[in-house]
Amino acid sequence: MDNRPIGVYDSGFGGLSVWRELCRLLPNESIVYLGDGKNCPYGGRSREEITRFATESVERLVSEGVKMVVVGCNTATTASIATLRDIWRDMPIVGLEPAVKPACLTTQTKRIAVLATEHSLKSDMFLSTTARYAEGVEVLKVVGEKFVDIVEAGKEESVEAHDAVRKVVEPLLDSGIDKIVLGCTHYPFLRSHIEDIVAGRGIDIVDSGEAVARRVEWLLKRYKISARSDHRAEYRFISFADERYRLSLEQRAKSILDKLLIANY
Ligand code: DGL
Image 1 (cartoon, rainbow, N blue to C red):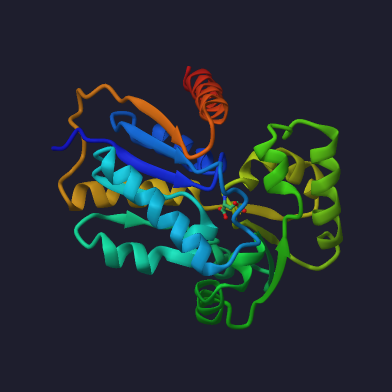
Image 2 (cartoon, rainbow, N blue to C red; image 1 turned 90 degrees about the horizontal axis):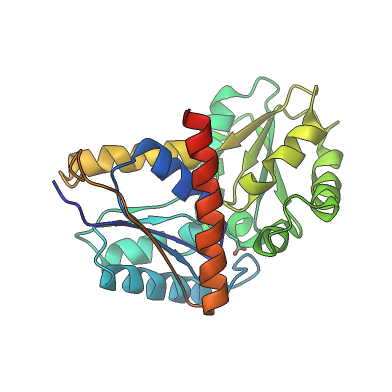
C-alpha cells in the first residue's frame, strides 16, 4: 500500500481529460497534476524541445513525491517516453498514444481518421504503430487546427469552437471512415461538437482516456503501490506558467469533478 500521489503531466489543460478518468476509476488515489502552460502548445515543436519540457516536468513531479507518472499528452509521449523511461527506470511511467490499435481492430469500413497534433502524426512512434496495426486499413491523418488554442482559452462552448471543429471534421464525413480517433488529450473537451457534426453518419469516436486509467490501475496492483481503500484522495495542481494559469487549472478540475459527482448520483 502506498498513499503517495500519482503525477499527471500535459502541456496544458488537455491532460485533465485523463485526470478525470483517473478520478473516476481510482477515487482513493491522490494526484498531482502538472500543466506546463508556459510552453504550450507543443504540437508544432521539435522532438528535442518537447523531450526537454517533458524531462523537466517529470523531474518536477518526482520532486513532489509522486509514485508513478502518467504522461497525459500524446505529443510528449510520442517525443519522449523512451527517454523518460530510461532516466527513471524504477518508476512506472504510463504514456498515451493515439488509439490506432483499437480503431483498426474494429473498423468495418477499413478506413479511419486520426485527429492529433502535427508532431504526433509525424512521429516515429505513430508511424510504427500504424505500420503494425493498420494493415489493410487506410488511416487519414488530420491535425485539429486551432483545437488546442481553443481549449487553452477556455472557449470550448463557443461558436468559434464549433466552427473550428466543423472545418476539420466536415470534410471527413464522406470519406468512408467509421472511426475518429481523438489522438490529443485536449480534443475530448471538444467532443460534443464532433458528436454533433458526425451525428447519424455511423462514425464512432475513439478516446484513450478510460483505457489509460485501467492501465494505471493494473500497474498500481502489479507494483503493489495502490493507495489504501480508506485513503482520502487529494488533488493538487502545479504549472510552469503564472499563478493565474495554475488557478484556472484548479477551477476547471473542480468543475469536472462537480460534473462527475452529479453523474454518480
Ligand atoms: N494535449 C497534447 C496531446 O495530447 C498536446 C497539445 C499541444 O500542446 O499541442 O497531444
